[in-house]
Every structure is written in structure tokens, then in C-alpha cells.
Amino acid sequence: MPIVKCPHCGKEVEFTGNEFRPFCSERCKMLDFGAWADGEYSLPTETSELSEEDIDQIEAANNDRSRR
Image (cartoon, rainbow, N blue to C red; front, side, top):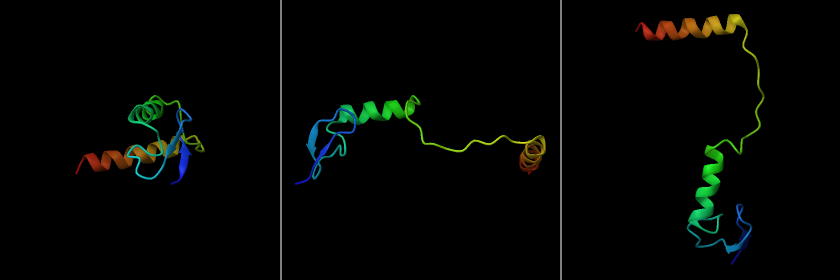
């Protein structure tokens, strides 16, 4: 049976048959979920600034949709 470490607390736990995998418990699973929800974790992304022209095009498209 494969043994893995809980990504939240580091406790070694059996992977197969563990309903909370890869976590050791529901508590660790929910603590990790809460950290994501609070913005403690994030995925790296590229940010870009929108030009005034881009913003105008987006607003025009939204206005066209709302008139339908």
C-alpha cells in the first residue's frame, strides 16, 4: 500500500482507500480548502493591462448583449 505525506500537516497516511486523499483527514482537507478560499495560495498568471481601446470594445460588446 502506498504511503504519502499529508500536504497540510505532513502526517504519513495510506493513500489507497483513504476517502480524504491526499490529506490525512477531513480537517486537513478543509484547512487547505480554506487557505485557497482566503487567497493564501494562488496559481501564477501573467497580468496585462487593458488599453482604453480594449475597454471600449468590451463595453460595446456588453452593451450589445444587454439590448437583446
